[in-house]
Image 1 (cartoon, helix red, strand yellow):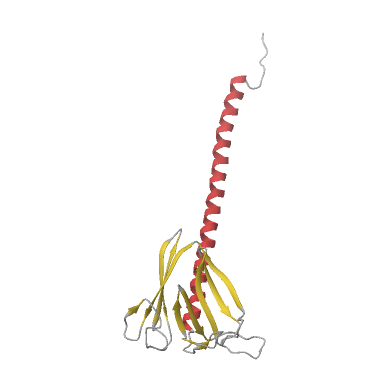
Image 2: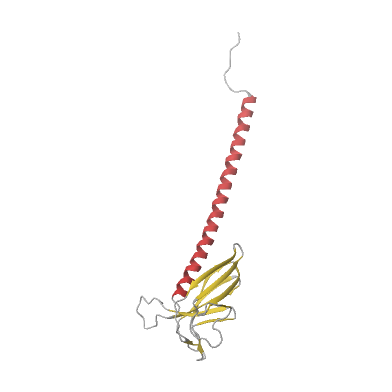
Length: 193
């Protein structure tokens, strides 16, 4: 009489190992795919936050635009809002002064593009000394083009500001950003008048 030996046969072990390998490969593939998806979602979220932050800053500047003209570093008068060589300059109110320093609550800001980055510049003084101090803040990367249009008091769209012989501010400013990843995005900002 033969004794029965309990245990697994070689074929059972090979089959079990193959099933485990298939399940492991599927699990690793799922984990890698999940991690890649998470990273792409995080990148897109960061990009959208930068875009929304840029439009928030612009909205604050344009909705607080002031009709105050300035003097440039040569003493020449410059309009309150001016589009010049693809740079938009404007005077805005609401410049926060938490330390109560002796300065204006008005601020001169500009938007321009440099090496595919939209930049916001502001000057330390409204009427500029001979060597004006500026601070540049990069707002948005991956910008291929920026364009501005202005709605005048007659509700006509203009490509320049200020038009010849006109003073003051437009009714609205339209900004068109051409982005590497999202294409063309337009935003309209109302200006107090």
